[in-house]
Image 1 (cartoon, rainbow, N blue to C red):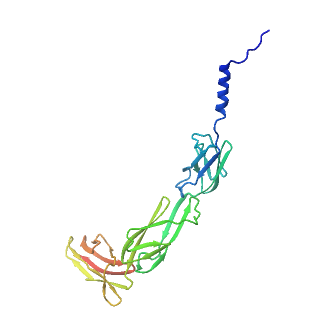
Image 2: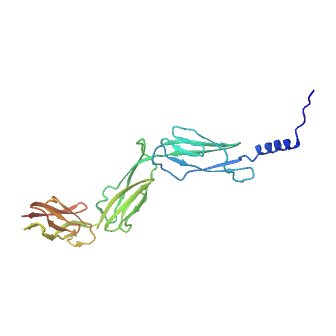
Image 3: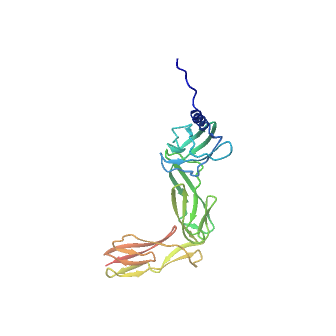
Length: 279
């Protein structure tokens, strides 16, 4: 009759090491951090999460196997490495478990689809006046985002700036105010005029060119209610028919072809014009 021999010492040692390896450190604490990215660009965008796993001695554990879940998979799913995949705007809770350690992170995901910023009357605002800005942001489903607050930057804060949601006209001139929300930007053209700006005047009201290629400089001046000339009033020039005459930003009118055209100069809501004929 055969009898079984007891395991050798070397085999017992190997088994003991295996048991000790299986009983290595396990996660005690998992900490999740809120992502810095507030607004997402598109559905399906990845949003990596930052997290820390600690053992019982407070040491960081790397390459720990974790199990991730999402309370609302239709809003966002989560990959094995903790990357959140946005499906639509909405709320979800991302859960993670490793050993006996657990953590949860509420997420309010917003996929930013459009941004509309308006400043009614910004094209002609008097020095010292303010304009309440109108901001409407929408998600991918077309729903208004109620707490959307863009950041604003002015190309010339000496002329115009934004404070507490209001456009402030500081001094006469032009500026471009840019609103930024997430990945979207919207620009507003601002034209600030002196508070007593009343009318525009030209040095001529009509002119006839004898042939193509001739040009003449038209001078425009802004006046207040007392007829005193004003400086720093932004002017824009327009030709009613560029096939007849063109006009430069400085007011030089050039004959292009035979016919009749009207050259207008505009400052905000003030306008005046002169007639031109090319023979």
